[in-house]
Image (cartoon, rainbow, N blue to C red):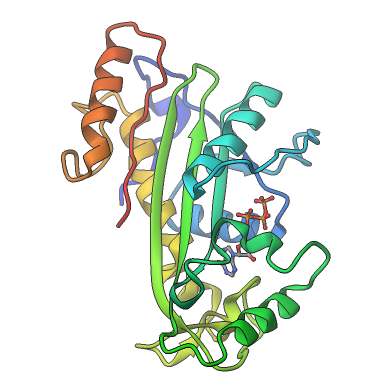
Length: 257
Ligand code: ITT
């Protein structure tokens, strides 16, 4: 991957290259993983937390999908700070639990539970289940002060282990098994996890979409795989309207792997 050009190297037609972007999260683990992954992708934009930017707002996750929530977070923080902002919404979806905990992953079992207690709740709920298939999903969205958004969403397929294993990572990592490796996310090093995780894949796609958006060389700001996603047609229309001076939101990449 080529990496984003540094601000001084890049003159773009429609938007200033951000030197800093705020990541709309209060989850330190996410912030750390995001920074690691963006660094691996050669991103030259400094990622700061709301706290580091002196902003303290509560953003209600009222969306009905990961992407809706990622956009809510990014837009609210962009509005509050006046800076380009990134939102991430992610979670564990278990087939035998009809997709739960899903978008409620952070709140599964109620507030105040530890990650370990939430893992035990999932393990208990899975007793007698015939399928242990599960996936993590990560939706990432950037919102810019000019109203544009750039998005990407990816998933990582795996299975729910029969017991919590490993101490790495956070959240449900200890019970999320990668069958090909015979290890849970909790047993992988950060580099091993990032290489295959939902967040690693979503951020790699997000970086490409961001490069498209920020690069004057890109012939069309359509994101990757234009035409492969049913949403793309709509995206293209929105981009065309935006190019024609329409103030509508400009959506540059969507889609699931
Ligand atoms: P912010 O909203 O402040 O970003 P959060 O932890 O509430 O922090 P989410 O609403 O996106 O974030 O909830 C994500 C939850 O899903 C997270 O708290 C974990 O329980 C779980 N999760 C997401 N990604 C994970 C990962 O890579 N490994 C393990 N669990 C993960």
